[in-house]
Image (cartoon, rainbow, N blue to C red):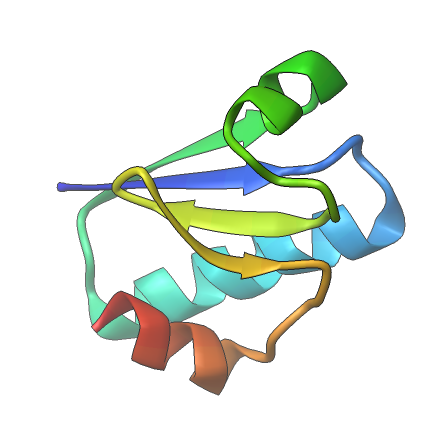
Amino acid sequence: MKKLQILGTGCPKCRKLAANTQAAAGELGLEYELEKVTRVSEITKMGVMMTPALVVDGEIKVAGSVPDVDEIKQLLA
């Protein structure tokens, strides 16, 4: 099971990244746990300075942008 984390304060871009990530994981048929990290102190502890960010199994895959579903599928595969 993959651990997917969306790092962001809940802005529209953060919500879009969460939706795209869920769609990508669903299309790939992945078992996953999605966690939304909204506290700025937790986000900066993870080394992210620009949100939104996508973290997969503890590895930062995207920061400061919202990739589309196909791009996220490539990051998750």
